[in-house]
Length: 98
Length: 511
Image (tube, rainbow over all chains, first blue to last red):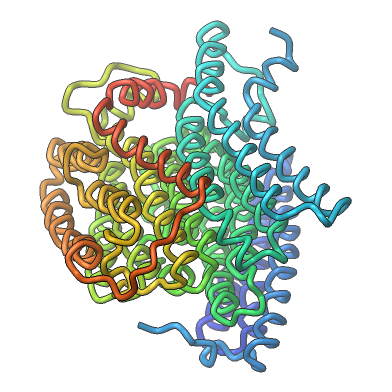
């Protein structure tokens, strides 16, 4: 139960970061926090609810792998942004408006 | 039939797509002098073959089920290659085929340096969308969504020297990654209350859990909807769509509109019905609200647009809303039918309309974007005022675009009329009359901005006199889209029969 509370807190901090930060790298860090909260949830539930199955842990492993892949493409994008705009602040990246 | 034949038969089209995508990368790597155009032909062949074998693959699975009535666990019941999945895979592959054929010239002129990556990623995206619509397990579902998303992020920002494309990519990426994290948290809640990730077992747990904590189910469903709705660009998860559609290279926009959205709605319907039909009354209001909002916002924001890609972006948001009417109006009899019990009555048309809508939408939107791609390649513009007098300069493009727009408005005899009629009728039969009224009003509103483009093309004088010829590949894409729009509208019966089998086949897999 404590783990679920911890992960809910971690998730909220992550969402807060995503919503308030304007630096693309900081937003990515917030997303990583959210993903780690999810991992914690999966592993904790798996260990307490179904101790003889490892589905939750497998899910957590997949989340870690996909988070790594996502971070790769995210940083590649941020580098491309930096080359084009010379900044990584998402408020300034706004050519398209209607 | 031995194990290998069955496996090949179940996953033939996926194997074709994987091999095609890898072949494009290998060819580009070993002989860099091969023209991007030939890689495009290879991609078109790959996707075309996989679209062509899809109906047969569906029947193969269906027959194999009837003969053996139980299924050995393929990939531990993670993927269900049933007829529902093959129907959606067919729609996706057709959308991709139109996309690739339409973009050959455009890519050669503007994206020549990255054509191998573009075509390979399109093949892999088709593959992962096939997994999306066959996923019956939370891990597979998550992986399929992520595979599609990562391919789409890379595709949207493929033109790295163009700031608009990169901006489209980063907006798409940041919203997408956040939506994925939220929906993963929802999945972890589902796992917490059910102790399993298999949708079928989650369904069995539901009556028990629902009695104790109905709000937990609702909250986790809404959280999971974040990433599903993000992929389908449903309001309120649509904020990325207009900018990404406008900024991304036009072939990528076509892919996002014609294929990615179809996969997303197919996934949403399967997730809701397959895993959560016991909580139908819990999520029906959520889906109907999302549907009404999506239609209204999409159509209202489409009206003032001057960029045709941006207008079509809002129009495609609106169409996802119409499709969701079919899901919101699903009746208990239809769910029973999909679970392999009972038969469909004459009034159970909501899901039929939903499936037919997905196919008709893929044809009409793919076709509309084909015209946009051709005009953008030949005239170098995407602004609606530049379409003035197109009927005199390139009459076949103007007429084709008119037909696609009439189908999207929902005017007979094109397919869009029947699909809208089915979902609206389904909504009325299920007691969601207000939703079909919202839908009809929205269709009227949508007529304004579609016909505005037609007015520009036919009634206003051309700004230049030059007459350009379209490439044969563009004509082929137009022909496929036109055939789909007109033939499915005039002769819907074989397709309706196919949809019936597809619905019946959904749960056959795990009985």
